[in-house]
Amino acid sequence: MQWQTTRFLIDLAHPKVMGIVNVTPDSFSDGGRFIDPAQALARCESLLADGADILDLGAESSRPGAPVLSAQEEWQRLQPVLREAVRLNVPVSVDTCKTEVMQRALDAGADIINDIRALRDQGAIDVVARHGACGVCLMHMRGDPSTMQLQTDYVDVVKEVRDFLTGRVEALLAAGVRAQRITLDPGVGFGKTPEQNLCLLARQKEFASLQLPLLLGWSRKSSLGAVTGRPVDQRLAASLSAALAAVSQGAHIVRVHDVAETVDALKVWRAADLC
Image 1 (cartoon, rainbow, N blue to C red):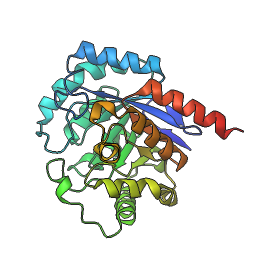
Image 2 (cartoon, rainbow, N blue to C red):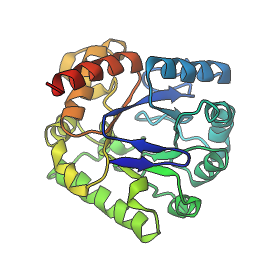
Image 3 (tube, rainbow, N blue to C red):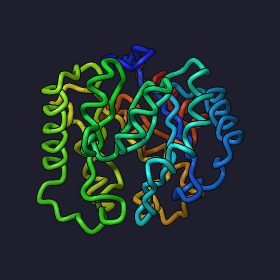
């Protein structure tokens, strides 16, 4: 598989690592560490040195109960970091659900729009359709970060997530967005219980029927804490285990905080897979 983005055609024959750069004061894991543009850029450079294939910049926290920013507030945080990140010669993803921020990010050279709301903001599909080349990641989430954990009443979580993503893909294709530009994210931790998240992992291969790349984000998630009893800053081993499990079930991209460790884990996994 390949993923077409603004400047890069990403070869997904082997799993890729997306490094997280949170330009936020309140993200659940590393909020406040990279709010300064210079710190955020240093984070970008460090992740690339560690082996990241893609950078994912986010300027608004999506943790449960996080405050909602205006588009202007989000862009003010994002713009100085994005301006420099696009000069690093790697695919740059922008994690946003606001149409205005998407447009500004694409105008500034972003390669990928990574949307936790799957382009449901008014005009969002039109923005990516007009662009003609940017990559898109569509994620499943019920409600919004303030309400999502109140909406976990699934009958069959895998089927319902797959059906939702199918509908969003159909909407993009109808708007003229080519399938090669689309990647899908089942939304681990977004409107699901720990048990439902683990069910998504156990049955992840069922998403192969959609015939599109899968991006999985298990890194440091609360479900890993529920399984291990570890606080967020002690979930490295669990995050690596989940990333490898996701890749073994067909994930093409893993979105992580701990890039160097994930890259090493994938090297071992690939070496064993070649035997």
